[in-house]
Length: 395
Image (cartoon, rainbow, N blue to C red):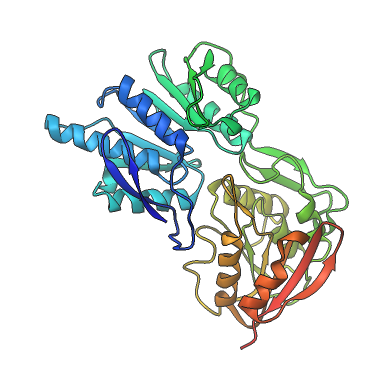
């Protein structure tokens, strides 16, 4: 959906990424609007180095970059630098597209991922509260050393996203914290940096051994960076999937699609050492987790690791087996759009006779979607909550 976002400085054309004419969700919400109104009232355009964390589709980054560019043009100099830090490939690409759509040079913004070294000094830190409390904890720990007593730290989110635990993290890691009144079901968080305070150590990444019912990887070590789905335990869907994976030998080229911490692809590599495994996810945190999990279990193995938009960019007819536990959320929204694109991408990259195996909640009806894409879907296994399904590319 392409829509107009009215900010205190300009009206912007913003879209989610990838653009889908059937998607009626906007690229911003009331919490983004609330934060920008607050900044317009309190922070001058040249207010120092600005870092934006958790910006979902680039709305905040694009608005602030446009503001800085406008202020620089009026003053005849450079505006305050804007840096975006994201764990999402899709956010990064949405930001690039939205900057271009609004005539803002990409060079006006520094685009970093959560795997990059953060800036050494932060004068204004803006935090769009993420769904994952762990990711918030990790990012605050990583950025706190760059804050100083005069840094402005403002978080934003919808009321339903901000909990006591959210405020506790700001309080413990940044400094004294308070909240605003709610406006249109959105709220702001104000934290006053206390650089000398003891904030403790960052507990991420988390390492533990997999449970004994994890089939091929029972008792094996796993590494989870903050923000990875079900980071503190093996989720029950993956646990069920592990018990019903196809095993070698002769699996060929295997793709762990939406790999998360890489447990599924690692299990395949252990079952069939001749398999060529590609781990791919749109999350930089997930791919880092998958690589560390794989290396911990298959130290001499050869695998590939890729951050990207599903299977976009991979050659057609290049895989023998695709394995996936598709997500059915995009941030706070429940949607089957991600799974649908995964299925379509899998059919494209699979060779004739290649197979897609997925696990999903029974109620999601993935068998219907697979039949639309592949023309077939076979039930491999089921329990009261989950199904494992197999689809074959025919011709």
